[in-house]
Image (cartoon, rainbow, N blue to C red; front, side, top):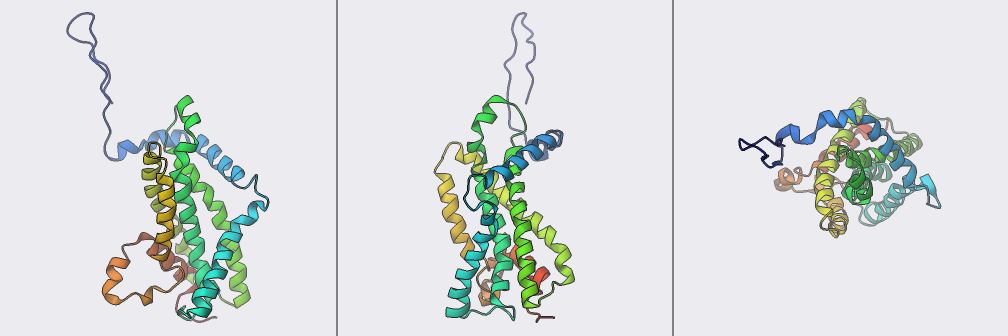
Length: 252
């Protein structure tokens, strides 16, 4: 942004010119760091308010992926009998569902974050990037509870994680950054086009079946693998399965 400059003609001031910034400067990372306390406050408020007025409260954290896992297990595991690469199908599906559930929740939360906080935005100045980041960070609590449920399931099946489990946090960060990339664009556009949030919901439903959550990526023909792997969530799901289950390796 350019500042107003005094004109050569006495008594006149050149107009203030506002220009879009480019590159990393446009993110305002320094301002974001200075607003870290606000980010923490908005994140904690997002976590507290998400389940405050729900009858089942925090139980929805684990019910959503669990119910989806049961449906996928019945339809794809027992009826369609899709291969799960030697892994019990509930574990095979649930390990991918917890990654996908976090991603889809983060995209939905960030997409509507600016619209839901218009009152705050219009009254106080702060880095606008704080709001969608807080929405994405709030879903990490759900992910932690889902990991705990997966741990119980793995113990019940006698399945131990591989040492690659140490790389799973990197895939979580990758999923969060992907969700932010999509959510920031849709959140900005949704301020003007409110129906874009509905289109995002439908798009995520289609994206779910384009990701190897309910089935193995080995079912995709080799000639299509390169195109198929352009899906960023392919790598997140594959990373979760390999790190947590050692896909293709039998129980220990």
